[in-house]
Length: 210
Image (tube, rainbow, N blue to C red):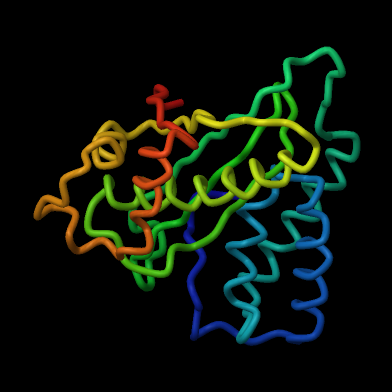
């Protein structure tokens, strides 16, 4: 997906057939279950299903052209890889030009096997990069805890799973048990990641930016 121009409602452009646009988005959403490389672009286009414009349709066609050019691109699951649970999380800050909400991204691995991935716009506006990354880490933590519970049914215990994040401030917020003034504005439901950290269900580790 081209980084510029950024997708907007484009109210001045001519509209297109909503049924056609939604059917194309639905097909792509189904495909994201096996093609995480198109996850972000498809989610961006899906935001404009209520009133799609010609510019949105062109971006969707670009995704189909990409898929046509990469028919054999897929995920590799080596059988001799280690079987340990870990995750990566990241977020942009105010990436949406309309409401300045950030987008959360996360992926979970079992060894070298990518088994789960997410891309979702955050429900609130983050006032700092640290907050946006902290909210993303919290969402990733929820997915990790759910996977831990599922794997327990198979007799596999993966407590204290690492979550890799590239923001030092977000790591410090998780590790700091004191609710200082800089984090009081963050929704209380997000702070469950601290509880998981204290119970040693997961821990955050810093990873360098790409």
